[in-house]
Length: 121
Image (cartoon, rainbow, N blue to C red; front, side, top):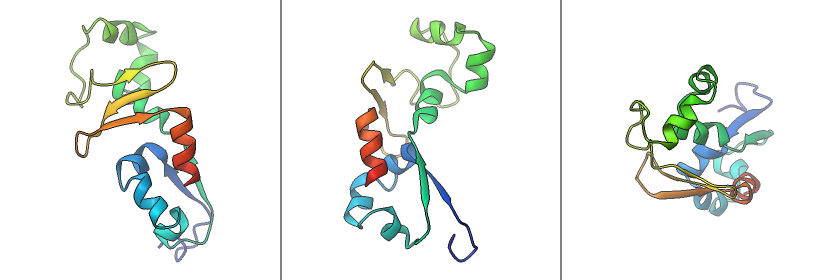
């Protein structure tokens, strides 16, 4: 385990935790520490980068396109993304992002509130 190797801090990604194992499983286990059997600190993030990548491709591609990638994507004239099964199925609003799970195809809603709650659980 990470504790056995002397890792002082483990980084966990909210996007990945939402999709697998899922917030309910972690919450029902008593939180991420009990779920993993770890006694040392965790740090989590929002998962926003992964959702950005689903919608617009990689950050490098987006920056190099100087905004054209985003504009082209909104007009559906973008080249197929390497994850074409989820590309175009990501809806971004001011309040949330809705996308399809790559694991089982289920609908996932990620908002600032749901991200924080998943990190707290």
